[in-house]
Length: 335
Ligand SMILES: O=P(O)(O)OC[C@H]1O[C@](O)(COP(=O)(O)O)[C@@H](O)[C@@H]1O
Ligand SMILES: [Mg+2]
Ligand SMILES: [Mg+2]
Image (cartoon, rainbow, N blue to C red; front, side):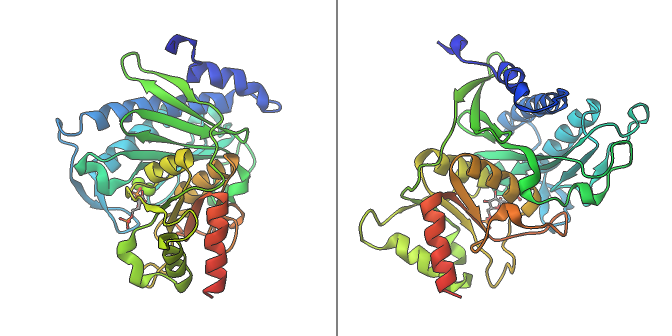
């Protein structure tokens, strides 16, 4: 049965023709991400057996204690991409600044930059709850042949050429889009091959799951408080069910399959929310929109925000279209 399913490698080649004047560079890049995903998956799976649990002892530019697995996943993805000389720059949650890839012999000839959240859901690493990796790919805006600059990274989400995530859960899946729908691939760990298990993934237009850290409730804007109350009221198809894993990738993945909304609003303690625009919100927004879902900062489209900083945060509302629109209504009313 599985053999009939297309492998990720086959899918990448078959879909290369979707890109006009394709040089195969994007295919090579997605292949490199596939490889790094398998390497990190292998490490994640044996987390309890080798010394990669717990804090690494440093803090990243977000002021967060880096977990050993944050650092390891960061190194694996960066090394895999560097070794293949297919990107001209990388930005990561775990790196203060972007990394310019200037290998001498190719004279800055590569046209893509990659932004990654190497390990998403870090608070869940030590407790064996599913975590993930998030990636976002842009074509550079500075001329090929010149060194990459910050400008190449500070692009609005609408410019993404590809985005995706890997979820290291009960099974390991790689889910991505190149602007032609969203497809999910499940890893067969026995042979190390990703198979197309979830073609053309779609958010149900609405659902009955809401995902938010209600521990922050008293700090939320009135609009969010009112929307949460709306979700909990006995009326129509409500109350909804509250599900919050604390890993954006896993909460998003579940809501895409079952229908639901994920929220990380701003609050009186996090003035811009917690999630990072460039390597968390934009890639998930691209996937959501490609799967008929919606992604907003509570008032407008995430992918139209013009970034100003590499690690900037934005409020995030993402999921089934009708649920995000309802949340936006409450945000507008709560102003
Ligand atoms: O513990 P909180 O404040 O609810 O935050 C959980 C959120 O923070 C994150 O862990 C942030 O991502 P990182 O783990 O990559 O820093 C999201 O995955 C998750 O949804
Ligand atoms: Mg994250
Ligand atoms: Mg992270």
